[in-house]
Length: 501
Image (cartoon, rainbow, N blue to C red; front, side, top):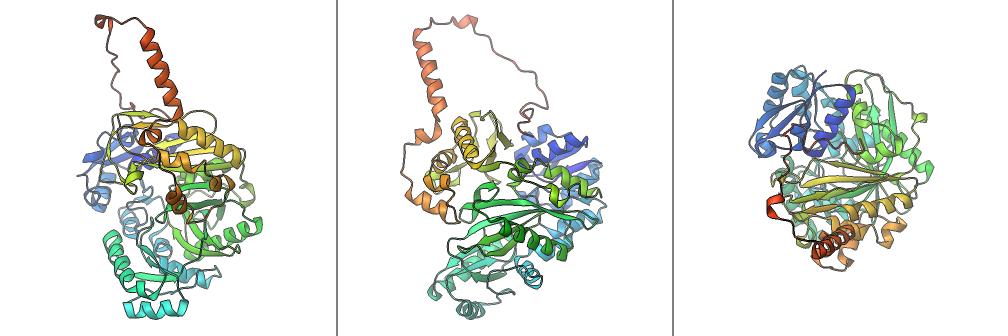
């Protein structure tokens, strides 16, 4: 088997590593902006797709299929984002005789569309948040539905994900403008303007269930992840297991998720997302029909490789694990490190990385697609890395996360490390008192500090002091004695640190 990876950055690298563990050749694809990307350097082969804009490269189905054929690939792994939840792409792979490492297009349609997924859930005894089960055709229908459900409500795009196309409406006076905004945003982001609404829960928790299903009718749930720390409906910190979760609720959520995917004829990896209210009642939110950004926290607490499991399932193998074999051990937490400016409302901050140092030590995993000297392009999501830590319990995991964040050094662009360094020391985070509004409350109450305190961690300050002290006492070095250091060029340069895989 040979696998083409229809993605970029850290997730492409993650899949390439799984391929190497299995002895399977991997094929990278790249745009003009990614010619020297780590995922290109690390792959066994690479195919150029086109210009930097995603619509001309990573979202261009004919070019990706042509690249797979030219490389002699047998299968395509879509990663997450881009075409990973696009049924047309899954069908195009099947038509071309390529294995799509993901769910069938039909299952994707049943569950990837939020309205269709809500209908399916409601008919298979999976609790859903009160709301409509059909798209809202016009504003008049929306007004009537909202009045029947009661405010506050959430207006949501039927397609897509990532927190886009979603707005809370607290009163009838806000509905008209919100309906137009959500519909327009959904059209721009997903090419689908359909909108629905559901009741808004006050300070809910966001908990998701990881699922795997094979082609032989076997399916398991692999524990859960706490995803309540969000900014603008986008997850930024995830952990497993979820906090203060009653074992009976965990089991009930897992069994509900299994009913849903079995009803949809689902195969491969997926995630059922739920909201929990203050009384502990859970409600199905949506289904992500792909591998999740936060899958490493599940891998660390279960000791299982989800990407290898995806590949084996796609190859027709039986699921290797029984439900009673999947026991969680310890606690894992993930932070998403972005090139963004916290002082400018977290606007993307692309640029050249002039200095980079990642943390080391026990319990640390780093999934990243960047390197020192790399220019982060403006064309794509500004995710720099996922920092994941594991500990025997949450207290140890939190301590390791604080240490790891302090050891991170990134220069040349703005980033959110300073935000995380403060967040993981916040009493609310340490106590696990989380809900989907926690991050917004923390951000609004956060005391401003000097930009230098965010950019230079404590370890770097000590190192700088030591260098300055040594410089002041040392004799000058003759310029003629300084020799340049020359490294032999290699396709593996920048891609040979396999931390935590």
